Image 1 (tube, rainbow, N blue to C red):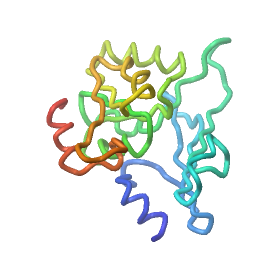
Image 2: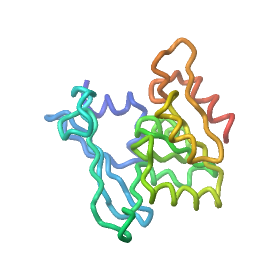
Image 3: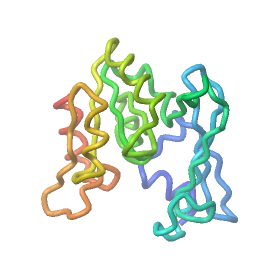
Image 4: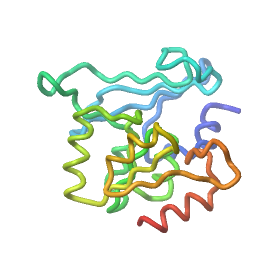
Length: 184
């Protein structure tokens, strides 16, 4: 399967989101944007690599955020999915790109913070966003999801009956449809 076909199977809408693909190396690079629309980093995705390597350049996921500081204590906010900002009134916040992609493909605004424990500057930004619109944190179950639950007005812990992984990126279509009906 080509990388482009693989990304489509992961629900990435390439008409909405920018992605650079190297078919030879089998890697996709997904840009991260600041709130002002500047390129601030990227996440590379190698579907054939092991997931065991944490943020290793040749692991399944590698995230690079630029080092430019807003002030002495905070990096600029850089998230994936800002292209979807105006799709819906409710903003969904997920940990991973492919979880957010499930929602943006259906016309919902969703960003991936690429962590279950967002940076202080991202948390501050989300506090401001919560003053403007509803924010729903879509979380994995367990301790990892518990950290992300705090960023929204409300949270939804993914629990797919009969599926031990409970990942929105791999959930059945009907589950994603029901999630959006509930919160939009």
